[in-house]
Image 1 (cartoon, rainbow, N blue to C red):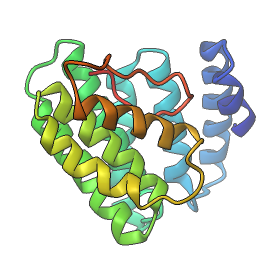
Image 2: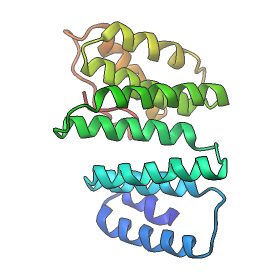
Image 3: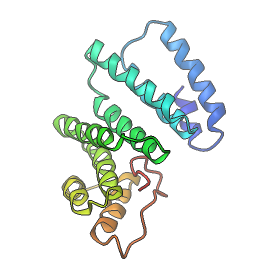
Image 4: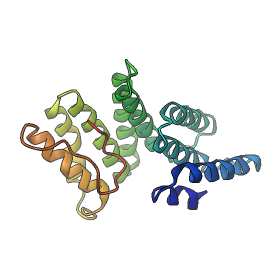
Amino acid sequence: MLKSASLARQGDVNARLAEFEHGLSGLRGTGARLGMTWYFSLHAELLAQTGQIWKALDVVEEALAFAEETGERMNRANLLRLKGALLFEGVRAGRDGGLDAAEACLAEGLRVAMGQGAKLLALRAAIGCASLHAHRRRFEEGLAVLRPVYESFSEGLAMPDPVDARRLIAYLERPALCRVPVSDAGGGALLEI
């Protein structure tokens, strides 16, 4: 399953999704419960890559319900961030009423990540929040969320998510002068504005 998820980033996502789903079905058949929310999040990300936003959202909802049932909290911040990103993508695809829900999920994901001391997950959620604020033309609010989280990093600044954060901060500081940032660094948290 992990190999399929990793190879999907290099191309042929549909074939890799089928392999991943086969492996996930087998894992579920064993009755395994530990760490399942992480596999659910990988599944949702693969579905989103193939454009199956609503199915991906269903998988995230299932994962959040599973986490609530089992008490598994290690992936909660990421699941909330992913749900917010998917809701935002749904709005961009024409579904009304999802911006407030997306913002609430992203903000809760940020709060959970900060509470867990999960800096990278916090950065990814902050990037999502700031992207949504930029979409709403609330640039100062986006900066207020993203800048402190980004500035808490002292290393790894050349990695994809910090690079995306830096680009988004530059845009939020001067939206009229900068192009809307797009992730070409391979980060997955930057939402299209």
